[in-house]
Length: 367
Image 1: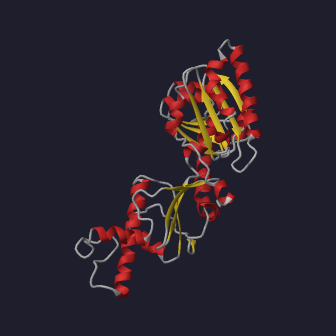
Image 2 (image 1 turned 60 degrees about the vertical axis):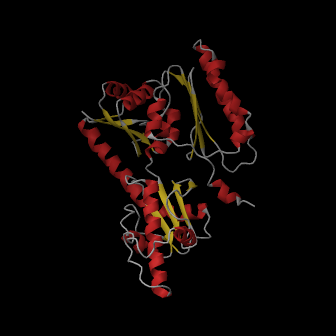
Image 3 (image 1 turned 90 degrees about the vertical axis):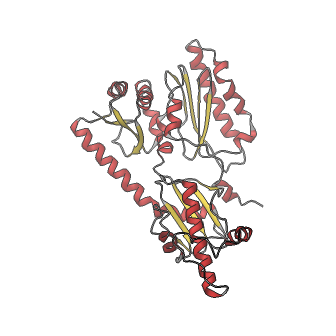
């Protein structure tokens, strides 16, 4: 039987990146933006479906007030309301965007505010925290019996299917028997050549080869330009061995010590978050300090009208949203949404940080 606690942390989420936001910025007026909190572990899905029905009704009323055929725009959304399978596979928040030609649905690992908005531009900045990836990290659960790789953030963890690394020492050795070249090929970086047969030396060389293959495989899967921290869950001796391969530059110095074979994903998340929280908090504090200094010299803006002008002139380098996305409920409509769209279309980056009270959105300027 599947552990319900494990299921709670491994439900489907949909990828939201800065490129996703840029594509959404191309939606045409009128644009419907619906957002709501959802529940991973609720067996009764009626609450969430009824909330979407209510938000959809509100959006339909706004569309009709503008003289738009609400049924045409919202038909794909209304089909989700009674889709039981959809509601049984949720994360922590749901964001839906639609215009007359297309719709997009995103299940995200963040609680979102309740929003039903129809405007000239989509409401995108509550998704900055997800798209910026500033809380993203990976976990490598490593032992000779099992290798598991996870992508995670503060609230969610999901196991990735291994594409390059062996899943165990046995798998590596089985693959090796198909091509018996162990004694003739050059050893991977971080290992010695194989000499002789049997005994402790052979076991040590095999382990070194396993470590090197896992490190190379994880690097190949995550990509050489990956900047997210990688937390190791393993017995202590494996950390320096993996570091010595030179393949995992983002591997953090503090491992989750011990054999991870019996740790559930939620247990790995609980142990890993304190390890990566410090660097994330420091990065946000540095960004807040940078914003404060820039605001004092006029190279950062917070006023919605100024934000829109700067965005339309291509002067915004980075859009800053508050960590708490619920601020959207107090934010004015119109200028902010259009500012975000214009800034994204001119190459602005997105980030989250602690902003002054009553500041819904800010920007660091290029000039």
